[in-house]
Image (cartoon, rainbow, N blue to C red; front, side):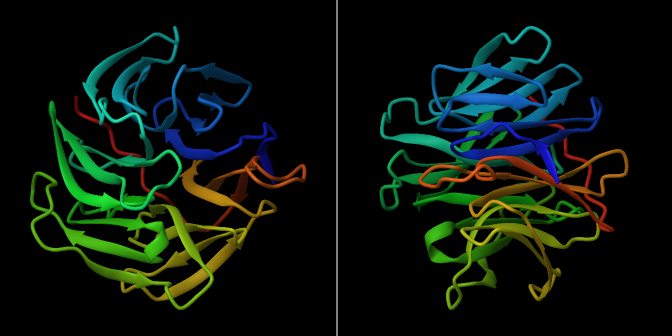
Length: 273
């Protein structure tokens, strides 16, 4: 089912705002933030968001983290993000259970190892993982003790243990290995029971994996380049998925979809600025 027929060149970063009961998402290449029936145009790439309060989002752009007012459209920079590097932009990101915000960067032309993954927490931005080509699949176990991420070309979703403040305290290890398959892991989200749901670029699907990494099932979508999932709706059982039209033709490509499931998602965590 189509949630919104707007065709995004690179749809990404869907966020179900839990106090507004409203889905937001981005067209990175179009430099826009979307919600159903409305969009906001930026003058740079924007890609991911977390919610701060009922009217405020934290938005990641090519060169900064911004405070964004949903009611007025006003935004202001709160912290630079690779601001001196004109060859990179932000990509995948999500808030963690402790109130931090993880954000990945990548080369605008997907240059090899040009990006990194960072965490913003209570006024501090710290680089966690350098030499990332395409940052994706940033998501978190419900208990706040595990984070997941991928560098898409590796086709491996990694996991890492977190301390009580949400910082990694071990080396990252392989959680799901897709390197012997045709599946390329893109954005991901973890549901309320700890299963990871991963959009797989070029495969028209969002695939579910149990906490031990074993495959559960997949939800199919009409667009080929599925890019990122999010759970939302009144019972958090609606699975939304963005997609990308870049390089493709066809009316379904780049649209934002939804499907009803029996899976309950986590309430998206609030960013503590």
